[in-house]
Image (cartoon, rainbow, N blue to C red; front, side, top):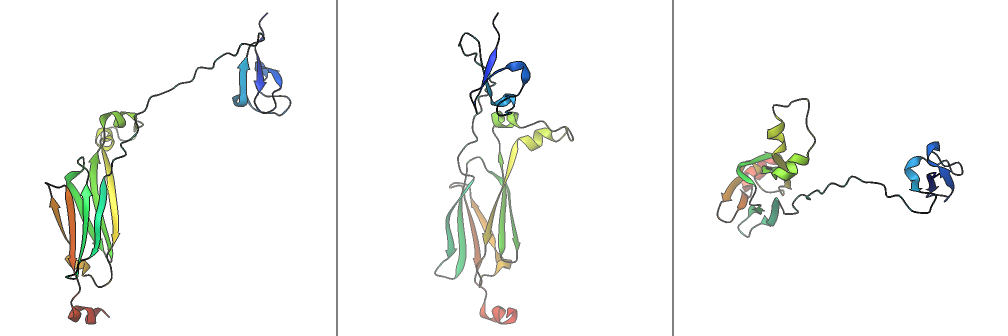
Length: 174
């Protein structure tokens, strides 16, 4: 009769599989490896799913950021080819500059996301896009009310500029 036994990985004790625990160290069944009485090891079947990793490409890459010699704050961002240029939104609150954009996901990656049961109508829309956000700090002395953005379609760059605060306006602030 071929009785299946198992060896505890923690203490190497022989136990019968039906007990579900090792009597020596009280390890649960997940720490046990199965072997037959003849010494042949039985391979446990594992579910392996081949998953394509998300692209390691950038979504945005800051090329340069700082104040130019003519006292204009400038930030240049290189955008990934997948970024939807019409989705770029810029928000300025105080000295914080936020750039939001949307990048569509691969269909293969979108299929791997779990199904959403609460709102099945929006599932396709949610799965097919990924929101990305860049937060930048505007330096002191820069007029955050006059931030301008220019998108260069040819070079896939976003250029954000803002002039320095004029001396008369700076005196009013302080």
